[in-house]
Image 1 (cartoon, rainbow, N blue to C red):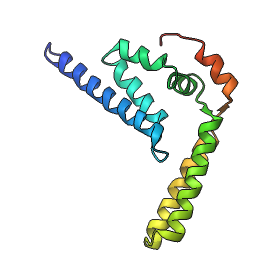
Image 2 (image 1 turned 90 degrees about the horizontal axis):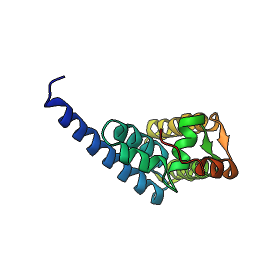
Image 3 (image 1 turned 60 degrees about the vertical axis):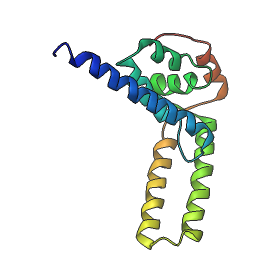
Length: 141
């Protein structure tokens, strides 16, 4: 790797991390946009650009427990599973009865929701008490 490549590469990862983090924060307020996957992507990008920002997400009061639960156990919090299933159910209802989309689009949307729900429901579940225990462990990854 040439000398000039490393700073450019680091800057690119830093910009990606900021973009993913911002998208994850927006996902807190928009139920159709997941938070955890974007925080995981931000964590990955920051691990290649800024240890300080990586540690910020890892130890963050709100996002840290979700990220650590996924990275350490491949687990999804029970609240997140319930809210995702509820949102997918409302979305499926809307798509089927009110969207006016062609049948192929409706079937495709329902199939994607089913795949997403199946994947999510087959991941281990952490209850709030287990997440709280994880939150008390401020460790650097």
